[in-house]
Amino acid sequence: MKCLICKQGDTHPGSVTVTLERGTARLVFKEVPAQVCDNCGEAYVEDAVTTQLLQTAETALQTGIQVEIRAFTAA
Image (cartoon, rainbow, N blue to C red; front, side, top):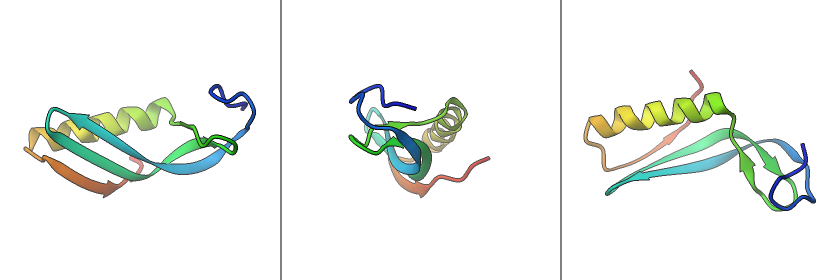
């Protein structure tokens, strides 16, 4: 697909790092699958992956984690 941000590049399968923050907690997910623009680097994460990231983050926050870095693993 054409990038919605730069309108110049095309997106291709890749992976990105996603950082989620709430209050003083910070969770970093590496190797998250996404469509990445070959021109500007903008990343588009599918809805199912976003849902999984948010669920994983919520579970981690409930256990009291303040800072965590993990590799993303698909459900």
